[in-house]
Image 1 (cartoon, rainbow, N blue to C red):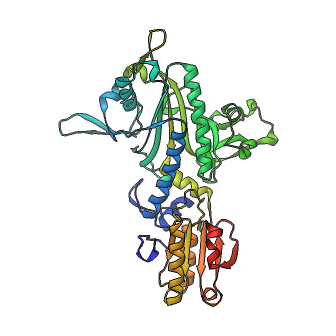
Image 2 (image 1 turned 120 degrees about the horizontal axis):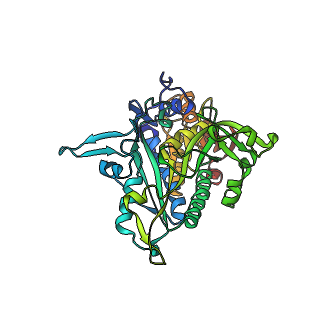
Image 3 (image 1 turned 90 degrees about the vertical axis):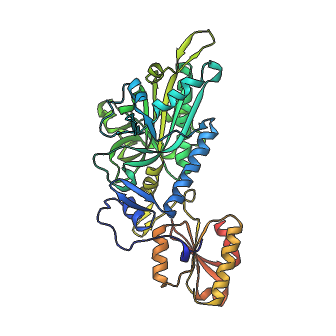
Length: 426
């Protein structure tokens, strides 16, 4: 992608309403535009990151046998009345009527809809276990939207729902998803701390929130320092859940099993939440199946969420410096920033064009800064955007064929022959 023709409306000044780093940097880096309080348009740069996060989330869900669906954003109120949540949910739910006066709502979550679907099509234990998930926009009318996409009113969420015949099977599904979440967040370049937590409005008997540590976190969390060195590719649920971690409201210092020397406390940003809640929804909505003994029983259920749009802000909170964003390679909008400091020079243009074509032919995503701008402006913009690698073509390249390569995370710079670039950034 050539920056001269790319829609990237960066800002030099920080908007006054931006209180935390991720909000400031997403606005300044041209990732989003605020339309009204807590509601954003995702611009090309931000959307690329959002789509990469979705891809990783889907791959890890599919890896453990979950099935992707897509449910409506608008739901009938009658389903929520069956579960007794329509009145209980509160003002966060946007309630509307269609032209025929039927009561509808903009879905804040989808337990009712997915349970209704399963009640119609799943009738036998032979169809179980079953976990369905989607990535869909949600709306919750937050009383005080703030911190950009970290606490918006409209947000993109992965929500999954499991259906099992009995408690042991339900626990097994819960364990699989617990482990898959740790792998998912690790692939996103994050260390996630699964803390025992309250189930809130969803309800349930077993619940974990997944937090990343950041100074701007809204919750206090307490956790065993061993979480910071877990091998998530080989973790078992028994290991992960036996290590102590708890949100502030669940932590009791006098009952904490971890020695003070091993206990860490920090501010946490919630990026995922999983619940087991038994037959809370299957009973009233009729999601039942015939077991091997011929008896019909209500299905055991769980709910599993990941804040996909919230993750964009969370990743930035955990990966930035005074100059801008520092993207993990797995979610970076582009892998390489190709910076031409001699944009008016025909030879420099030819060198950059050839390098751009070589890299893109190898499926390496490149943002090519071919603008006729000052060097300082180009460097500042690329540090702000935070792509993992910067390849700089300047006077020395024209004289010696050497380019400068900068690693955005470490700041390390090296000079190499232009034909060796692929070996470093590939």
